[in-house]
Image (cartoon, rainbow, N blue to C red; front, side, top):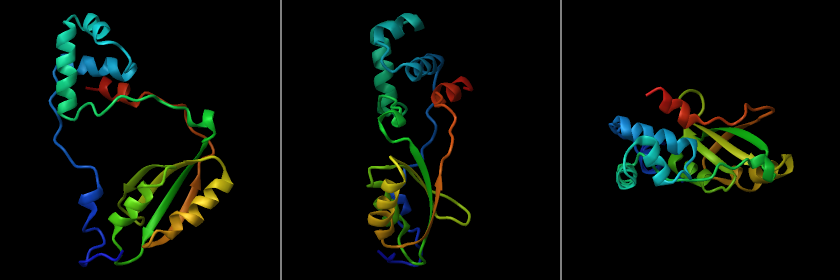
Length: 177
């Protein structure tokens, strides 16, 4: 879809995650988050014992952190290679002049294999991280899905050949606070 006005980036705000002000954490909130990022299945009673507060206090704190968007959900960490999706692919994309980049981002985001869609500065427009089973699946996704999205002018495909083991990013970053 060609953008209605002169900027191909005019609608980015509609599809991008909203910017937000940092939420002010106290020591109990921070300690609670550290416990949850280590193991989100830790019970409120166990957390209360570790923090030296009551279980209802933990429940109230968690609810407040959720309401304020600090905690956005709880999920399992999956080893995608263990279930056949071991190939990580980075796809850089340049949009054609005048095309709505938000529409391209939305089209990419809808693909099940796409993990991240990021608008970047520099010579590229978008950087995509995806997971596929193998080269044949990647080829099919590129030909039948990605390259059919209107407005994509050029892509470059980068295949991951080695990765560091998964780390608990949240625990490391919270440890700096």
